[in-house]
Image (tube, rainbow, N blue to C red; front, side, top):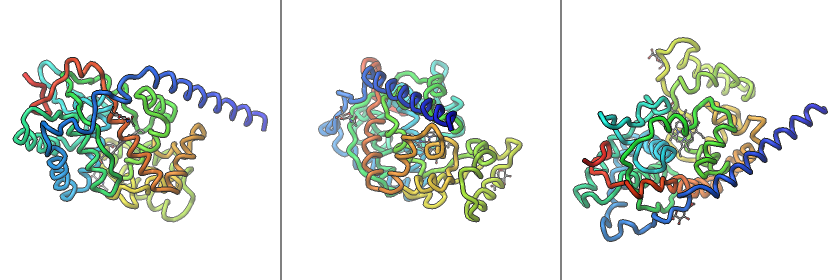
Length: 343
Ligand code: HEM
Ligand SMILES: *[C@@H]1O[C@H](CO)[C@@H](O)[C@H](O)[C@H]1NC(C)=O
Ligand SMILES: *[C@@H]1O[C@H](CO)[C@@H](O)[C@H](O)[C@H]1NC(C)=O
């Protein structure tokens, strides 16, 4: 009883620490309300930009709803590495090391050809005007909307970087088996809150994960977080056959993160967490970690109230898109091709 009590107070102290840290960091961060961005940025220079992106995203998501997930994740991985600057799109060249081969991105990012297609259309409509970073931001909004998620207005005016952050990709991006406090601190150092983190994790209501990212979970605490109901049991059995405990041949076998409604952007992800059936450790710990007092409450809230989830998700996506590196406005550009800096 007594040791339980001291454990609880230690947890509370830890959470306070995280909170204080967050307040300090947020106030010192640039770009969280970026004065360079506005809703009318292309109004006179490329009035059809939103239409063109929407049309291409409609084609892409209609042909395969997975494409919505691919684009949404690309945008996230762009913004967490030197701000939303299109750096994730850059290929390796003799003079530039891109982010695509960083451990956190390798074999895990797709959808680049969709961005190429949008860029091509925009270059014929309004050449050298719309940045790749803006394309990705608009496309991510459209992706969410097209699979049933909320709408939000997208502030525009980002510039594309002339460099990439290979090392930063592994430092800044959260990973499947990372601890809750470590993931929270990564969001906080980007100017995002615990609430933003829990809402944005709702992205995992669409898309897939690979065996390598859920192996530890299914051979770890999965049976402890779920009840012994037959549906959870047979779900686990299927996961195990897709992803055997040893060997690496199955590392890239994929499965839906929200097995109930994998192609629909809804709040079903949070219901999956309430049942203890989250596919990856980073998801389930939002609800099940003894460190996650605040995150557990948020999971319960978004499970109970889909409108509250949509509203918070939209706001948090704008915040995610607002992360910018002030340096990009000094030496940034509008790339002609999203995969390469201008010569
Ligand atoms: C909270 C920390 C997060 C962690 C630890 C995390 C981790 C992961 C992992 C491990 C995967 C599976 C990748 C693979 O196996 O190839 C994944 C997929 C995905 N993530 Fe996250 N993620 C986080 C937050 C986010 C955020 C903030 C977004 C978007 C705003 C996002 C969007 C996605 C999407 C859409 C997919 C599916 C991609 C696909 O279908 O290929 N994630 N994430
Ligand atoms: C994002 O940046 C825009 C443009 O500066 C600003 O108007 C808006 O308040 C910011 N939004 C959030 C949620 O940070
Ligand atoms: C998983 O991957 C392995 C190796 O690529 C393959 O042989 C196996 O059939 C896959 N399992 C399923 C269920 O798709």
